[in-house]
Length: 450
Image 1: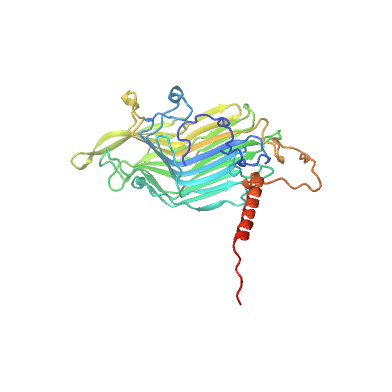
Image 2: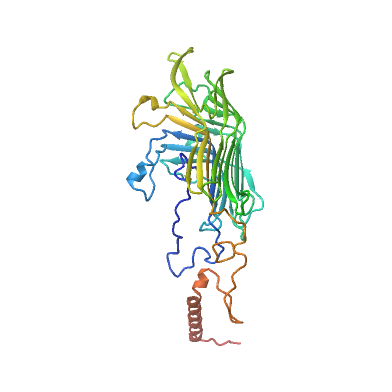
């Protein structure tokens, strides 16, 4: 499981696709057609504690159903991506499968190659319905991979809570909530292209203290209106960050204030909002402050030094820069549907923009800390919390009267294979029974001998 790695392609929910049906028309439908149908409500929030991108912006994005010209308009992706400490909360009131209407997931890691992201084991997940009064908590086990030498993770813990009321639908608190905490993290411990840069077990990035990610989707009241708004929230908690840890050029970053990204859809374009609390970071080297990152000053270049050939540790050579960037918020709107992507900190090793050459990746390696994605879309006028009855598409005050039946009429058949194949099964049983009678009658009888 990975987040939406990169800018939001569109804040609006994806276009409605036909409900898949059975291959054989005589088979039962995938879902009960008389089940309650709730007003459209779509929202999701995703948070990643760390995203590592190798050669970002080097691969053209492709998607089924898009022409070559449409694909060229999409932003390019990295050759490889690795997500660490992921938390995802999703809500879709009109999902085909009932249990997919509310989903909460907490995952230790996820990866993507050329934009394709398979799901990895070792995660916590909870779905509704049925409703879950209590969250599911536990430790997370990162799956073994060839990237273990690149990334080291400390103790991981997760908590997931997905809820759904069979009559009121998403009118529960919360609808979906996912949390992931990580005791420590170190990434990019070896850079083959720059030998000697990270000696003695050093790391390009190290987070020595506990950090956490949380994604939540809930309904919130709107003053003066009956309908509720849907709100997707992503929060990240990080105390300190070390760059080039274990080297003479170590840089320390203290997180003075943590970021928070919130998308709220009220059902109206004018009142739907995206709010971002930008982080404030203090950067120091050797105990001396060298800069501060905030919304007013979102970028800082830090020189990277390495020892000269010959092993003279006292003589250093500037071999590149680390580009630090924060508050990169990408907001998208489509009517009442809103969405945004933000990051606590982007660390780019050896950025290539100064080379003025087309076709190059934006940097050798990019690490994004605290990547946040939120999207929300509420029905027109907001979501009204009233009981929804079967075979209706909107809240109703009273259920429709059932059709008239005879006094001894049997109840309707269940939506199972047996219900759709009752008559064939009856004839098959009768034929087998008749064959059994004929076989028994044709067998010779043996007399008992006393």
